[in-house]
Amino acid sequence: MATYKEISGTNVEVLASDPTNPVEGQVWYNSTTGALKGASVSLVGSWSTGGSLNTARSALGGAGTQTAALGFGGVAAPVYGLAVTESYNGSAWTELNDLNSGRGRAGGAGTQTSALAIAGDDVNIPVYYVQSESWNGTSWSEIADFNTQRSYVGAAGADNTSALAFGGFNTPPPTGYANTESWNGTSWTEVNDLNQARRDFAGSNGIQTSALVYGGTQDPPSFTLTESWNGTSWTEVGDLNAASTAGGGAGADNTSALQFGGNPIVIGAQTEEWNGTSWTEVADLSEARSSPGAAGIQTAALAFGGSPPGTTTATEEWTGAGATITKTFTTS
Image (cartoon, rainbow, N blue to C red; front, side):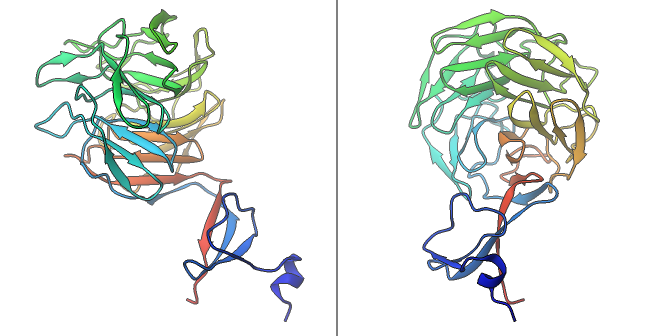
């Protein structure tokens, strides 16, 4: 019988921890856990269970990556403006310092250590915020006010010094805004509007110069409309396959994105991928939910919290097709 070395040309490595960037076909023995492991490439995308939030809630803001995420604010009746902040390390959530102003339905942008919580509301007061807050990895600080108070705002941004925020609404009737504002680390500036005013997006993602917004509502209807931001203006591009509001969205820029959950009619589990031209339906969430927190990119996303109805602590991790995954070999 041929040995592994004869087949692959290398020995099985003995490592104290799993390699950071394993390649397809690589096999190693983790001497710390006593497990034989290998790397393969996923053929189709799928959701798997992650660590649960400490506080069940929906309509919370999100920032960061699948393995280094931040979740903040949210709603868990009877409290409609939570201040709770939690960080995710790829397996578990940890409570950190609270927002200065508790809020739900805020826009979230940035990273786990450099994030923004943008506008939002607390309907118990009631108040629709112009205040935004900046996260430095340890605590939140109030920054310059938004020009237009609103909640259900969409957001995109690389960190707490550059971001884009768009859409949303404030007082009844809940007519969606088209307003777009740009953040330069010091102040907010109004820039070109969305083509379609809307709120309660199915998703939004990207950076200040390359963003995407999809779905949403104008009460009624719910939209399939997708718009792409090139740093100057919004352009309508390919529609979602299914109209959706109050979903989650992840993606690095306007050429790749993931949309999941939402509730155009009933609370959904649907997931769609954007390739820069069109949307494709892929594997559903394990648990249908609306208004989840979201983080990550198209091939490695995170969905946390939401309303199934009520609120949930459930977290799900998305591994997209073509992503490298680690498998543990067993005797069974």
